[in-house]
Length: 337
Image (cartoon, rainbow, N blue to C red; front, side):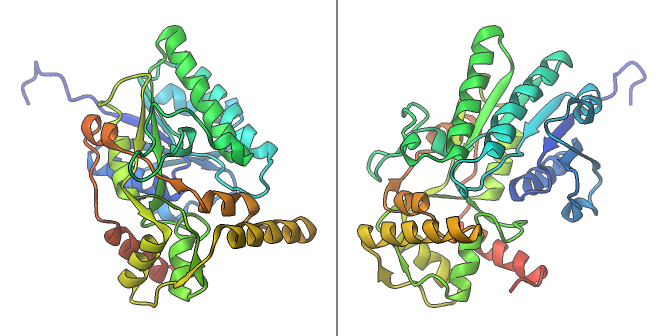
């Protein structure tokens, strides 16, 4: 190296929720680009999926400034993936504490420590969904408040807060809004539970709606790109393919080599089943496989367009079948199937 030439700048990044499915994929994508990755995970989590990686792991409380401050002093960028995604119970103080109050704290720390860009992982449900022929976009008004889920409402409020902070003083935030992710590093309680249930033959039928599915690796790629691509103060729906439940369940089953669910459950049957499950859960205090709110959502066409993310964040569109195979291979490795 020329002695007069300065050494290349080391890119130092905090990833919150790094032991989750998306967090794991983001960490590996960042490492592949030669970045220095500092993982923040919830205290009490073993973070075993990260143990073999050349990363620094900090455990703590996402709402505790003392736990977070050292990381923010030492790093330049943040990718915030941590959040509560549980839909049961539908009303949850924890959702607001983690999905909204913690974001306010992180923004204050980022501003105090000169963080160059804050990449926030939200959810596509913070925008209105649409039918297959006119899917929701970043301009679609939020309409999921009708489902009365604190998970969705708290994420949407956090998004509003972040955009307001950017408009107020140029806070360098960019928001990614993933759709339904499938792929490697799920613990079996996340979105890939659907794949396990189809593999085990525990889903007898499908509701009349549908959603947008995406390979989690594509979202991780877009998140890494968002450190230096995209525009501050903008949201990007990071999705893949819009599919009805009938078609997506068949695709998953065929990829796994198992029989697909064949029973079409009419709307009134689906919603009645969800209502019954929620009523039983209120008595047993155990989360149901399907809630009343989930059943209602399952009867709608919750479709989205990712044209903006594909164009501005150069987001890939990996075949969903690859994500299904990667998920089941991961479950086999973990001896869950």
